Image (cartoon, rainbow, N blue to C red; front, side, top):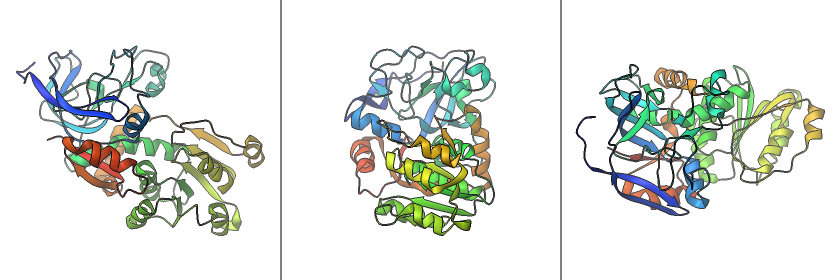
Length: 362
C-alpha cells in the first residue's frame, strides 16, 4: 500500500445513543482484490437510526461469522468515494476513479450467491454495519465488487444516494409498477420519497402518498409528481383511493414504506383485486394481518430485503439521464462532528423537518 497516515478520523457506533467521532488506526493492509477509498459524502440511513435509538441490532456484538467485524463499528453504508489504491488483482477500478459503494459483502460461492441472490446469503455483512470499515471515515477498505464507477455527470451526493435508491427501486420492481400504473405509497421517509420519484420516472399515471408527518407531506408536494398526498389521521385513505381510481377498484400496486401494521393493512385494502402489495419498510414487531382478505382479493404479497447487488449500473444510468433526481430528497448537509445532534437526533425527531442528511467527509 502507499504511505498513509497512522490514524484517521471516523464516526464509530458503540451502542444505544453512543456514537463518537474519534481517531482510529488507518488501514494498514490491502488484499489483492480489495480497494482503498477515500469517502466523499455519506448518507445517514434509517438502519443507522435504528442502531442509534435501540441498538446494537444488526451491528454484531460478537465477531461477525463472515467479516469478523465487531463493536465499535465505523458507520456509513450509503456513500461515494475516490479510489486511492487498488489491489494487484483489481481491474474494474483504478486510482482516481469516483465510485458509488454497493455495501453488501458475502461469500460469492454459496447457495444464494450462485443463484444471483447474494443479498440473501446467511453470511452477508454490510460495510458500515458489520465490516471493519465504513463510509463515515477518512479512508476505507472495500472489495472490488463493492466499487461502481460513477458517470461523469453524476455528483458525489447522487453517487451516495444510489444505495437507498436501489432499496426503493427493488420495491417498485417487485410491485410491478409500469407506465400507466396506479400506486399507493404509505410512508414518505427517504425510501418512500424515492419510491415516489421512481414511480414517476416509470410513468405511473396516479401516485397516492399516505404520510402523517406534515413536513414530509410538504416535501413530497414540493417534488411535484404525486397525484395526492394524504394525512391518514385526517382522511380515510382507502375511501379516497376508491373514489379516485377507475370504477372504484383501487390501485394496481401498493408499496408500504413505513414499517407500521396499520399502513400494511391500508395497502391491502386499497389495492385492487389481483393487485400487488410490497412490504419495503422494516417492521420492528409482529403485525396483525388478515390473510383471508388477501385470499378473497387474490392479491400478491411481496416482501423485500435490501436489493439485488447488480442494480448499481441501472440506478446510475437513471440518475445520469436526469429522469431520477434523487438529490431532491436531501434536506441537510453536516460535518462528522455534528452527527449526533444535527444528524441522528434531528432525524429521529417526530416533528423534525429533515428527510435525508448527508455527512461531508472531504
